[in-house]
Each structure stands twice: as structure tokens, then as C-alpha cells.
Image (cartoon, rainbow, N blue to C red; front, side, top):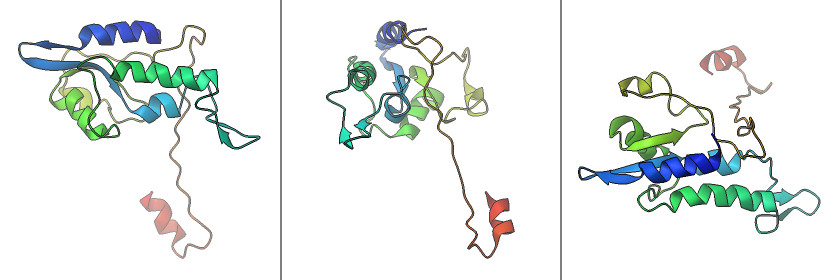
Length: 156
């Protein structure tokens, strides 16, 4: 599914039905923009200057993400980083049709409360089929200065 197809589906699913407002698609901004599928650099490594206004791929990534939050009724929570609120809309309130998750916020255990749901691949740009977001590894380190390295390792 392309981003354009996802957008059209989100637009259709964003509506009020029986007095309940439904959102078509929500996501964490950093999942879409920060780990962008175009590998667009937000700064020029040679000059260390921002490229947000000058790099076409950076603009494309931003504009793609922003258009979803411009759909009337599909606005994000007041705090755009309130992933807990988005998760509640999806899992608890069940007033969100689709949620893009790239860090495991929604897992199979938490989704077990849902009825008639499924998983799908991450949307793609038409000219980049099969290319998903960058990985987001979580790393932990134990320094050689630690006096309790074994206990620290077990607690991770």
C-alpha cells in the first residue's frame, strides 16, 4: 500500500458515526519523519546546516506526514508526542481505524482486546517499494567502571 492509498483510506475512515468521532490514522511523528524511508538527511554533514527547507526529500517526508494531521477530525492530541493517548484511542476507546507503530507500542498482547483487526506492512512511497522506516534499536551499555557489572547485566 502506498502513502497516497493510505491517505485516501485515512480520509475515508475519519468521520463521525453515531455521535462518535473516529480518526483514520495516527502515528508518532518521529516514526514517520525521524526514521524516514527516503534516508533524507536533515542536515548537511559538510556544513552542519539544516536542510529542512532546501532538501527535496526532507520536504517530501515532512509534507507526507503533515497531510494526515490536516485531515479535518484527524488531528493528533494536543501534545503530538502523547503516544499513550494515541494508544488509548486505538486499543481502549477503539476510535482510531489505523495506527502506525514502529517501536512496539502496540503489541500482540495489548491488541488482544481488539475484535476484527489485522496487521499490514508499513506504507511506501511509489518510487521506493519495499522500503520501510529506518530501524530504531534500543541499546544499553555497562561501562567497565561499574562495580557490579554482573548485576547490571541481569537488570537490563
